[in-house]
Amino acid sequence: MTTPLIAVLGSINMDLVTTTDHRPAPGETVLGRGFTMVPGGKGANQAVAASRAGGQVMFLGAIGTDVFAPRLRAVLTGAGVDTTGLRTIEGPSGIASIVVDAGGENSIIVVGGANAELRGLRAGDLAAVAAADILLCQLEVPIPTIEEAVRHARDNGTTVILNPSPAQRLPAGLWSRVDVAVVNRGEAEDLGDTLDRVPHLVVTLGADGARHRGPDGTQTSVAGPAVDVIDTTGAGDAFAGALAVRWSRGPAAALRFACAAGALATTVLGASAAIPSRADIEAALSAGPGEPPP
Image 1 (cartoon, rainbow, N blue to C red):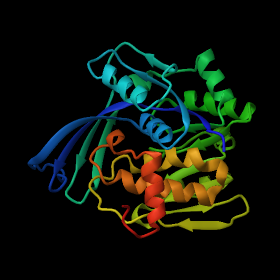
Image 2: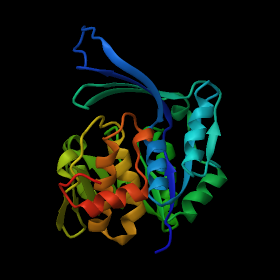
Image 3: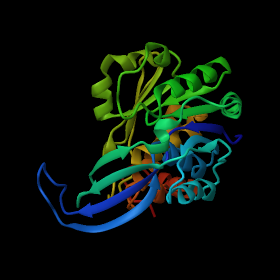
Image 4: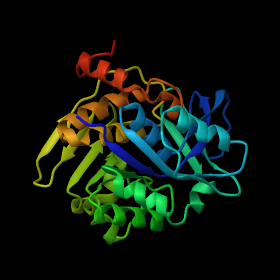
């Protein structure tokens, strides 16, 4: 099986993560238990996830000129991601303020920074999309840029996987060019019958695994391994990146691999820091559904 070539278009942020016993209600002040800064952003997380899961990955995105920028670039290169398509834009990089409670659930505020200024694709970006087996996108960069990439992917036979998060209205022309949509339960409810337009729909179900609906309506459900959850931040991104790597092997095999990756990502604090390697994912798979990985 050849190594899939994956182009990831998306955001890259510095995640500012605070841990606390419970997340504050409106107007409430609570004491935190810890604080850390971890490179993240849905695009970068998925690029790192795909690379660690065994893909050959190029990232298309933007960082700023602030103190976070060098570390953000380093997390991609350290994971073996090609950063030729990572441009620098004057001003701040993207950040995400994340609060994680004792149960591992989180609340997140994202400030786009350089991600919001990623307007239009360069010739090298378009060439990367055309050469890729898969284009993997999310919705934390400007929609017109995503539209351009998806259109170019469809014109050049590149499979398009879209994680439409944060969920929002998208042009009908964009949906018509998507091959696979990856959403969680909440996003599936928000988007409703819009997702009927997509040939392949993958819904992540947290601890319950994931399910797939194919072009003919056939449903496949897959369980994930049992793990001790510490932080769910980035679990969906680990799932999406791993799914892209194994998609060519068929939905069932891809879902099993992705469910294991997503589950393992919940066992470590932070997003990119928690993303498992291919060896870790395969070890979890060998343990079987519902069993703790060795």
